[in-house]
Each structure stands twice: as C-alpha cells, then as structure tokens.
Image 1 (cartoon, helix red, strand yellow):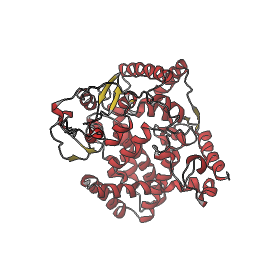
Image 2 (cartoon, helix red, strand yellow):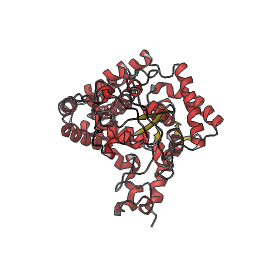
Image 3 (cartoon, one colour):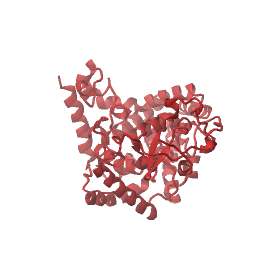
Image 4 (cartoon, one colour):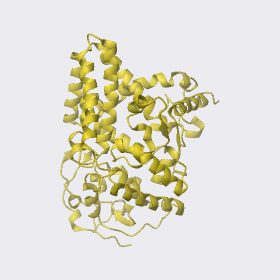
Length: 436
C-alpha cells in the first residue's frame, strides 16, 4: 500500500505553548510542514511507519507525523484512526465560518493516503446518511449567520459578570449573605461565558480565553482536555469522564460497568445532590495540580490572583460560601442533560451526530427568564453539543430549526421540562443505589 509522503514533514517542532488558535493545549507547531516524521525509510519500524488514517470530507489523511504535535494531544488522532472524523472536526475546530481557519489550513497540508483495509470503524449506511444531511444543515446555518458573534450581546454578557462580581465584592462585609449569592451567581455566569469563549474561535474568544481562570480559579487548559473528551465521546464508557464518577456516583450498576463497587453506592440518592456543592472545589484542585505540574505560569499567576482576591476582599465565610454555592448550581445543571440518557460502550457507540442525539436532552425551563438565565445556555444542551463553536445566545433561535431538521431526518429529539430532568437524575441515582 502506497502512502503519499512529504519531505517537509521532516523538520522540527517549535517548543511548547499554552494554547493555539484552536483552543487546545500541548506542543504547538508553526505549521504542519514542521512536524518531523519518525519513520526511518531505511530501517522502518511498522509501529512508526504505519499510517494513522483519518477520513474528513470523504478524503483520507495520514496523520501519523502530525499526531505528536496535535495541539489537543496525540491520543485524539489515534482515537480516530480508521474512522470518519468529519463531524467531530468541524464541531471542535476552526474552519472558517466559525471565526478562524487555522485547523482547516493545517488539515489541508496533511499527506493523503489510501483507505484502511479494515472498514469496521466506519459509519453504517444510516449513520452516513445522517452525517451527510447534517453537513448540509451546518452549511445552511453558516450562511444564515448563526456562527457570527454580536458585539452588543457579547458586551451585555460580560457586563453582567462584572456587575455581579463588583457588587458582590463591594457588599461582602456589610451584607455577607447577599454577597455570597451575588458572587456565586457571578461565578456561574463567568463559567458559562468562559465556556463560550473556550469553545469559540476568533480574536475575541482568544483574547478572553483566560477570563474564567482569573475569575473562578479554573485552569482552561486542564478543563479543555477533559471537556473535549466529553464532547467528542459523549456518554461513552471509558472515554467520557462525566459518566464515570465512581465511587461517589454510580450511573450504572458495577456489574454492568465492570468498575469496583463501594458501600457509598446505597446512599448516593441521599448525598448525591448535596455533594455537587464541591464541584468548583474539585475543579480548583485539579487546576492547581495541572497548572503546577505542567509549569503553566500564566495560569498559575491568574489562579494566584483569584485566591488573593478571595482572601483579602471578603470574609472567609463569603469566599467559601460563594464557591460552594456556585459549584452546586453548576454541578446540578451541567450533568443533568446527559446522566439519565443512554450510556454507550465501544460496541454500540454512535457516530458524532447520531451519538449526540442519543446521549443528550434539552431542558425546557419552567420558572421563567430567571431560570433560563441561570442555565446560561446549557438548557439548549443538544444544540451546544452539535455546534459548540456557535455563540450560545443563538441556541434558542436554533432550537425549533434543529427540531424540524431532526424530525425530517427521522431522528428522536429529546427534550423535557427542567424539573423532569432533575427528577429523572435523582431517580437514576435512587434506582442504582437500591440494586443488589
């Protein structure tokens, strides 16, 4: 089997950088042309010389040389070896209409190769049909301006965060309870906005990327790696950490998941929701560990400034209370739209679009605009998972359009009242807790 190669793939890797335009951490190169090819043609090692084949837009690329320099890490490339990565690529990367095109330019420079002999990882005919329809649907949304950012809406979203933090800090000593609530809501909204920036592409998102690190003490680089796995392999066993939370939460019986049991399981329906209050503390802990281990000095400085603010600008009760309450709110919402849905393994996992519809449910808010605001766009979870680089304020406008498209394609669009989704999550914890 012949693989087209390029002598340009034998140059050098340029040092380490914390991020690149595409929102991933890791070793960053100036271009694909600078990645060294470790295959020695005179003394070939099959492991190093065998192509890593990715299919994008019906073209097979050999990403062997690029794998180690991929900003998201080498593992991502190997996860898609022999698979069609088209929909995942356009969902998470910069390709032009979503604000930047760095990833697409890099992709076009990869050497092309023959298809793999083993076609078992390729989509079924039905999955391929859905994927092709989805690509046309995406192009229409691009043409209709759904990926364009609105300056007024961006300023309004940021001003809310600034106001909540500013007022909360100002009244921290005179009105500590009010300050705790305001700062918690500020942390929640900063998290949603930062989430939008990290997923987004373009100059605005690049410039605001580390806002949640400063305001919430969360490592963007650590979170991006974790969260991108969740987006790409939603509700897939051994891939999506959001459905593997043992021993604190069991979403499947240990006999089904194959993971160890714990005496805690029989109590999870009681302690489950209160325990979500430690969410932000866990994220803060992981952020410090990863930033220090990887010597990410920019993040270390920003995290340090956040702790100085907490320690000097408010009573310790307000600092602890606001982080705990904010974590509870976010923890209750971020997992709700996935955990009681289908959990898949390697034998029945869907392709990107198919998998998102099977694993994600939209929430219909029932308590008016305030609840919708608190959700921060995550009530339109399916829209977000299908189009993560789209500005979140366009998701509600997209919802009826996506519903109509799904119906035309014969795809089940899952949506329930927010109260029902929360109740279903508790029922799941209760059911697994009482299984022998």
